Amino acid sequence: MLVAVVAVSVVGVLVAAGMARTLPPPSAEALDLSSLVSYPPVPDAPAERSVTLTGAGDIASCERDTDEATAALLDDLPGFVFTAGDNAYGQGTPAQFTNCYDPGWGSQRARTFPAIGNHEVETPGASGYFEYFGARAGDPRAGWYALDLGLWRLIVLNSTCAGAGGCGNDTDQGRWLEAELAEHPAECTLVVWHHPRWSTGHHGPTPGVAPFWDALYEAGADLIVNAHDHDYERFAPVDPAGKADPEKGIRQIVAGTGGAALRAFEEEDPNSEVRQASTHGVLRLDLHRGSYDWQFLPVEGGDFTDQGRGTCH
Image (cartoon, rainbow, N blue to C red):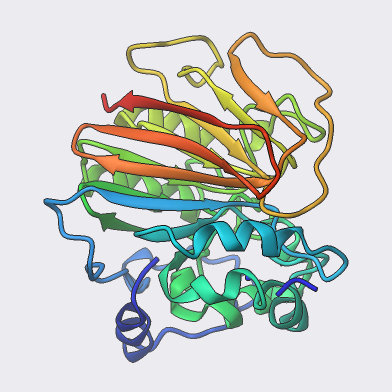
């Protein structure tokens, strides 16, 4: 049975600030972005130090125990944990978070930065997700948030575009992202959300998140991590049109290997450098000043690995 960004003090600060834990119904009125509760500084991640961030997406189901194998990889790793959405199958209900996600990855909750996926929003208001992660999921009116993590800026977006009020530049999320990038210019930026712009897996590319890419490319973001397709796939740095761009391009890694059943690849992309759909595991990122290291860590018995280094723009 399955049951699995930062210290508990972060949660306390946000709850004290009055953050609600359920997502209200969508409104036709624009969200007052200035009213969104922001993450406070993250304890144990000072700006002068490198930070480790490890995780995956497509994680827990009570019908499988693979997520417990990936959760075991996290126990001895330093730093913090991320999720890239579809955390609890099949609908992200409160019971599925309690009974399926919590016994495995739940032990990491106090240091986890979660992202929301399409299965979470199958429950009205994504209430299972927001109730489980509480303040760690950011302001529940949004489903997106950002914070300084060591030397890097970490941005978590909500790619369930219909439920989020859209992902375009003229939406609440689009306006928030534009302001975030303008107000927090960073030497190095990592962005996590669920649906990948580029993929050769079962679901394939997601054109709906193209506005994210446009804004992030213009701002000089460095690394994007997604899930949704149940596989691992690393792309060379590309521009928003998907063309190779080794100078300004953003590297994207799909890490949908957290525990859900893996699926075969169905397409080809010349910029797909490494891909596999045979081994579950987690993606470890070591975030340094001006650079980052990535490493795919397989579950016990897995024989696939991938590692390398990238530099910030």
